[in-house]
Picture (cartoon, rainbow, N blue to C red):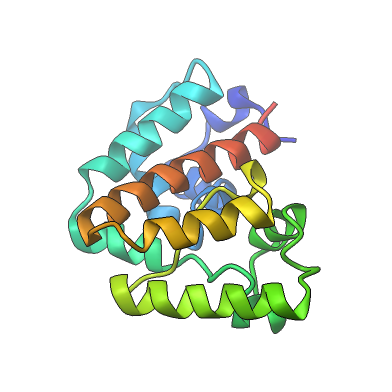
Length: 168
C-alpha cells in the first residue's frame, strides 16, 4: 500500500511511474498533477489529476480514451489487459459471459466504435453486466462530444477507485 506522505516526496518521474496504473496506459495524466503537491488527501491528488486532464488538448483526451480496452473485447479474450482492467472487468462478471452476452457485447462494441471512433468506457466496478449493456445501447444515441465528456467522467471514476484502493 502506498502512502500519501511518501507520494508527496517523490520526484516527478517517480510519482508518474508509481501511479501510472491510475489512468490506463497514460502516465502523463499523473505526471501533470505533480506540481500541485503536496496533496492533503487522495481526493485532492485525484482532483489535481482531473484538472490536468480537463486542461489537456482534445488529442490528448482522445489518446487517453483510446488507451482503454473494449469491454469483453479481444484484449480480454487474449488476456492482454492491464492487471487493473482485468480485475475490473472480472468484478462485473465480464470474464464469465454466456455466448449470447458475449455476442451482445461484441455487437455493441462494434457499433459504438464505428459511431464514435473510440471504445465505450464505463466504471465497470460500479455496474453489472446488465447495466453496462443498457448503458452501451443508450449511449449510442449521444453525439460524439457528449460521449467524449462521458468517457472522461467515467475515466475519472475509474481512476479515483484505483487510487483509493492503492493509497492508504
